[in-house]
Length: 122
Image 1 (tube, rainbow, N blue to C red):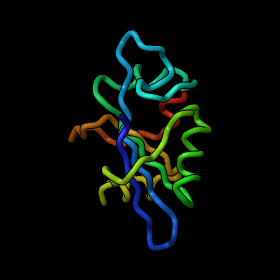
Image 2 (spheres, rainbow, N blue to C red):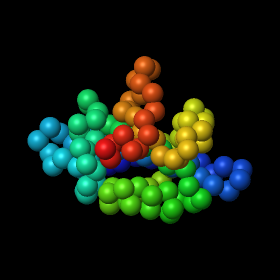
Image 3 (tube, rainbow, N blue to C red):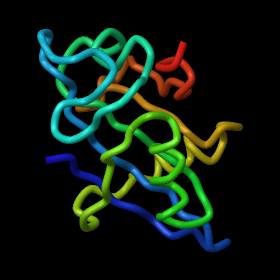
């Protein structure tokens, strides 16, 4: 089950963080096991070596944040609860990125930086 959470910023916008499982090697490329289907070209399976993926989205509200992910092909992404809200470092990272969409493998690896979401699309 994907985990995630959100934080409402003083300006009214939100930062949504989702931890999504990566598919096994034999899974269909282009999706994430556990409810995400659709067409990310190359898939997260080819971009991440193991475990999960942490995705950050900055948007006007939670619904818009999830819509941004669904428009990228992550069709079955839902935010249920607030068990894993974004950390202050994650909030800073997504606020300083022009696209407002970032990802990296989870659990956090100290040497890995945040990647723009278009790195998964191309």
